[in-house]
Length: 270
Ligand code: ATR
Image 1 (cartoon, rainbow, N blue to C red):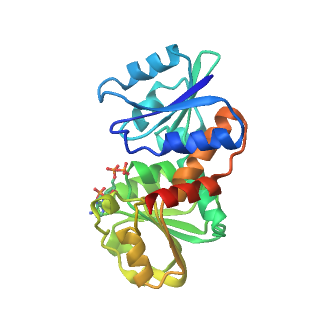
Image 2: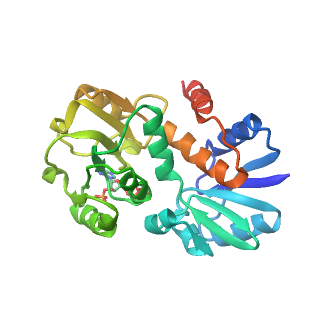
């Protein structure tokens, strides 16, 4: 049986085993998928051990995504740009790394009928999570991407790092000008139930707001978006399921149905 796993620390919260087992059931694949808690200082050893025991591929979550990228023999372009890997697989003894987070986000937006072509996108935050999705957001041909961050210099550096991929600007929250079609919260503020200091005037009645975080009720950012009069506010649960679908496709060549697994997770969270 083909073995897959997700590595992280902590890992017991991970929904990836449930998602991938559902995908396997849907597509009639015989595989196992487990959650592995790697010691903080022993991720490479844990990964090598998994491969020796027959592991074919793996997902990687916090805090190992950057380290995973450094272990690969070959990276996809988007993983190299992101400097982080969430999907690994071995082929002919070589370790390949990809980053499916951005495609997962863009697929979920697309699933909700949100077209990024020629759109104005505001991204809040400039940490690892944002870096991971910027290559795919820029590949979707928006009119412009504005990255705003508490520490403005980090947003400016990101804009500089990605400027060859499209129209991108970076700055602080006070520098944001205009209104946006899509506003994506990629800060870790949601996890602490707080909100980045953002003016609700960036929202228009046709804006979609997307929190890359999710919970068992709307996040503080989703609540803010509703108050601000956005057309819709989505949580990152759809991104989670869709990034998993892209990984599953890479590993098995089979196309699962993320929408039904999304529904299953929503029921679990309720
Ligand atoms: P991750 O891997 O989740 O992206 P990270 O790299 O530590 O984690 O980045 C966290 C991001 O959330 C940063 O953009 C951080 O802003 P700073 O760079 O200024 O620290 C942002 N963030 C965290 N808490 C925040 C808060 N309460 N308000 C605004 N931004 C916050």
